[in-house]
Image (cartoon, rainbow, N blue to C red):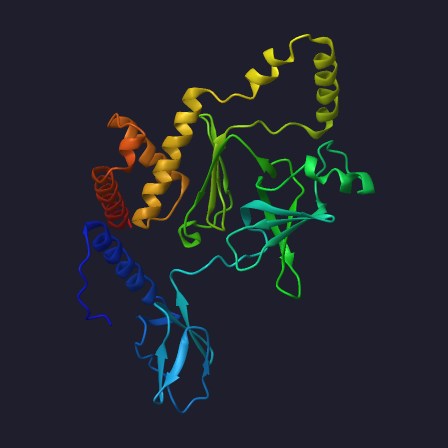
Length: 327
């Protein structure tokens, strides 16, 4: 498999080289002994009673790999850790999902996982910000909070015995996302960090890097104090009742400025370029791509041209080589 010759274009060759470099770096760890592709032999001691784990199979008395990845050994267990795989949720992950069903006392979300996730009515803050028991009236008004096709940010709470994934949104930073774009990238390109919420102050936008491969780029929204929500809602109701032309204030406030929309599109295109090239998605790399496009005075559509893809790849290779020399 490793000796095969494939006809690849320039971008594909670059991605293949970076994948091979990643395999070599991972295989040099103490708990790994080799990088393998499909049908490669895995060296094992037949005298020991080994356990064949995920990504391995027995063929003609040999243990071969059924995935491309790195061989891992834990005591007598031998398995292959794939470099590219579907999203595997962990408790505490920040995810972005889309509502697909409003069920009794719960919302069902699509989160790029093998199963749909569930957000219970009791696992989120109510719009009034008051902590209280959920009543039948709250259940009847669920569609006023979230409805089908709404984009939501939440946190992984835990798993049920049947594998069902439960979410929670008990903070003001979680909830419905509006005025932005939802991007889908491979989950393995999102590096898990302590902070997945980013406010790009110079562009006036919010960036949420979902661990499940869903990324939200939208207009910045200030997180309000829950104690002031009720007072502000009462004031707004009184102003709407007194004003003769309600379209003059509310409609203007809900509109996104042209400059902000352009910044959202520029950031989204930077993420698309990095995803196509197979680079890890971090806020530092995204900012570098945005600054590169602005320094070259490129239009938003020109960012998706082949010339910019090659330039980004060259810059990223230079950056990684410089980091390697510093180490």
